[in-house]
Image (cartoon, rainbow, N blue to C red; front, side, top):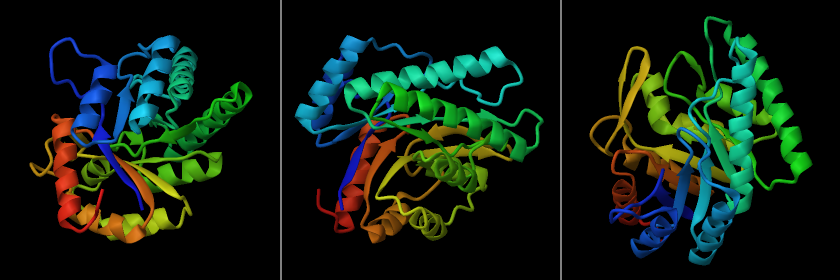
Amino acid sequence: MKIRLGPAGNCILSKGEDTLDSLRNLKKNGLDAQEIEFVRSVYMNNNYAKRVGELAKNLDIKLSVHAPYYINLASKEKPKIHASKKRILDSCERADLMGAKYVVFHPAYFGGMEKEKVYHIVLEHMKDMQSTIEKKKWDVFLAPETTGKHSALGSLDETLRLAKETGTKFCIDSAHLWARLQGGLDFKEMFEKLKKTKEKFYHFHFSGIEYTMKGEKNHVNLGENGPDFKEFAKELLKTKIDSTIICESPVTWRDSLKMKKILEKMGYRF
């Protein structure tokens, strides 16, 4: 069982550092994963993506990509759907160039429509994107993420169903699920559902979280509020399945190191 840990976004230790510096900083600090965050746009050009991929491979750092947040595959406006798909596919292209396998994204908002209708709209658009990925021969997986707001598609069941019916992967954000369930997330139950997928690898996001009745409000540091990492880790270790855990707290790489210490105290050896 191999567990990798690292931040969402760059590990910046000095002013002016970039993604390449981030990878070196992670290696020095004993971390071995990073999610490249295209939060507002796919800002990285192809040549730079290749350089990032080459360095990550040399340093044995596993990369993933988060597509921009401005995505809604069930928008009532067709231009927004087209733009959403382009952002995801542009992210897939960069991911392929840097050797990142998982392209994480938030699929859609319900926008007053029935949940099942939105689900099937997203399903068809994901299948269409899968066709493009196969045609381009990009070695990547679409990975819809569990979301933290009730207004968005992304419960655990919806996410696993999407992955199964499109032949893609998934990203499980425990903080988002915690917010959706108002603190009622049962990790044992969650991992039982993951086990049924027969997947050989899990991609997780983890952090603390603040929430309201509507769901997610904002991510906070590990242990401040939200899910207990020890409880999560206890169930994860039982699976014996390779995993990457990306930290999304405000102090991403430092909280990744906290997670590492917790796992080591529980007997896991990196």
